[in-house]
Length: 361
Image 1 (cartoon, rainbow, N blue to C red):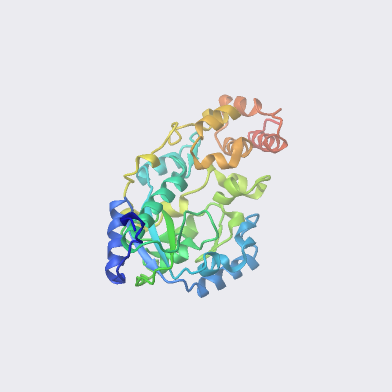
Image 2: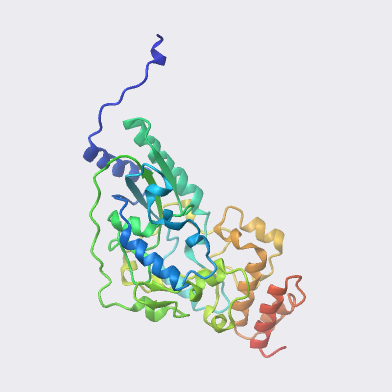
């Protein structure tokens, strides 16, 4: 038999050594941290059920669409024994620059995770390379890679994997790196040793609850997404409820306030990933500049960006609200009036509201 037809045999793995090697490979691939968790998410499953029962997910029907597969990894991917969780930092600029943007009512504020290229493809490709290295070492094994692309409780898994704790704002926090990072997972059938969770270090701090413009963090560790600016500007398809419009300020895509005030983010490091750096001047653009984009310009300037998912109509909806919160100036009024006859009823409604704020309708 030709040698190339002989099956390659792999010695039984030393799982402890393999776990250490996986973490080293992860660092080589650019991840800031890699941890390993078991798949017992019973506590997280109870919290998710309570959250859904309260209706806090709003229009995000996908949060309940897959039943318990979200909290039971082995039901989503049969044979799964462990989850390898990886962290990739994305902060493109220091927090003082973010504060300056928020304090300028003429400026458009875009959540910092969305200033550069969409993270999904980059993170998925890197996780796949890590999975391939594992297979080169131990042979073909069952695995699947996820990057916020399936029913996965990524924060609960990352917490179990020792990558941080879920803070009062419901984001994951690492005491040495803050919370400005993406998470990705590899579901695997390898019985790797698991990492120990870290202790919650939020203490008596309530900075995130106190700063939330819409009071979406209704209690520590409890977020009503229906009130959250990220939900209102990204997930919500219809009109933004009037009770929240003034609170949006100049935030046109997402909101970083709860992370911005978190004391642990004084340790957040700027990203080394050039793909996460701002594109098309989104970190310095004015509301009027962005409101002037027609659909072709929107599609061109959001190619490869997470922003594209909301579409041009909701983009204009969000900016109209922000312009309604801007100072009353001739150029602001002119920009709004230019959209008064927009084909979309959704856009027209929010433009009319904005003009009314300037007492000009």
